[in-house]
Image 1: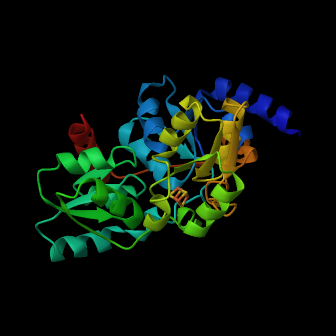
Image 2: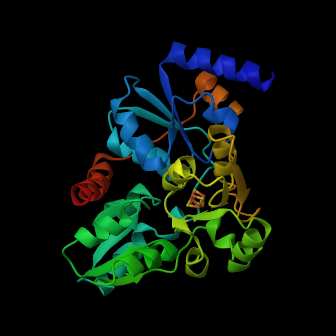
Length: 304
Ligand code: SF4
């Protein structure tokens, strides 16, 4: 089957079987083209609450499908490729958090949305990369334990110096590959370009950026800016999407190594197979959903 034929077949099957397809921005273009909705993980989870379909397929990594399930527990949520996990999310498990809570009983435990439902369930409040600064500012407790990404945590700490922020030494293996030398080389090669970067990059790299923000923030900034050239410091699939949405502008990768292999695992054939034969459904006990949703709801309350 050719790509176009498989896409047509997917479009026919998803309508016939009543499946809504969500695709994270880091997915490949052939998947984004057949998705009902595309975007960042939390935005997609919120969107899934309103779709009429009872069956939702997440094209992304496991914690993203879990977050969809947390916000829409009555729906059947499927993960397109069971092997697609987020190595960052796996770095802080429930046992580690419980041990840290015992050691630091006076701290508010803030967890990045890139975490498992089990980890969210034992934390106080969750954050996205775009809401982290605001949420941490709004937490009453002056003592914050931030996990699992210490680079995002360090960036938040710089914006909220009035808080006492501790963090664990975790990080996204994709964004950790970007170095300060990459910034120097990219600026030298493209002197007129603005450097847009995700706060999951190392602090010594982030401080060289012209703009720091979430993937959605980077895309909006590049689309709306009057500048014509940009160096993109996040997962490299974003470059392709930007080239499609703003073909008159030029986009360069900050590092050719900024590729998330887990996000690239899902293929068009996985989606086709799910629609034909089924895929892994995300199933969680009610008490886990209740506790993890409390952590997400606290983010919504503090973010208002
Ligand atoms: S880019 Fe990093 S944080 Fe995002 S899914 Fe991949 S490993 Fe996880």
